[in-house]
Length: 308
Image (tube, rainbow, N blue to C red; front, side):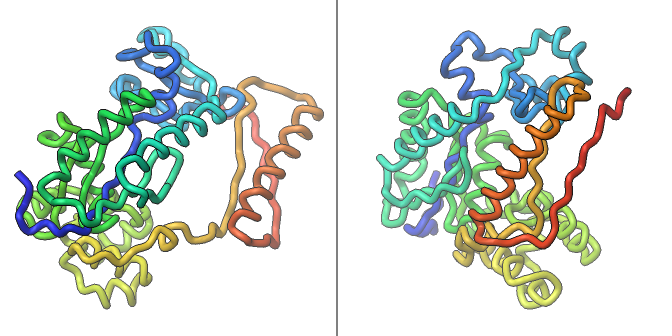
């Protein structure tokens, strides 16, 4: 049932499930239901996992050479990353989302905020199901959809659509600002799982006695602003159902930029190191220019296999 108090101004967060692994499955359908991991450049570390691989305990960033035995024991499918493919599949997904509304804000390669302002509130969940089915049919990529009156709550709704019983089966979750379902969810979710709350911020909030999303929602916004920043204050208002955050608020220029990849094999070749350094420096420069920043220092770190 849709809460009758739901406002007509609603956001949906459409997030692709296990995106890199799902892209691999589109072109290799026999991988469906099998554990799949995708490796970083040079096949060094795990950067993406299917749900089956997550259930087996494979971790993000785990060096592949440390878990070869587990890979073989469970017949895990290992694939090298193909970022050209993932970028193309992302564009297809975003184009499909624009069939439902032109108001699509791309947040990352696998998720977008989709505006449903003016839609009949009673049709939102049905529209979410239709969106999921259309994206799956046209691109092969599974998505979950979270509806809410603010972006922070929409992120939380999407998390519930993926993880929480009662929503996970449908893959769609609709949250309103003051419904009992929203309050119950906020009381369960650790504050560090909220969009825009980093681990260190979470530690500082814990010192203040704020450990759940609900406790942050009930906090004094002015006190939160004094102790943290205007963005954290806006998160409080968003949790209360008042739109306060734009995407630009969550994409502040980075103070540090790191480009790091494993070789995937041991090397002592100066040529290999020079080529890697040139490539990484060029990529870091691209990221620096993209946020219109300059740098005052460059640091190069090289390390060997810590397990040898």
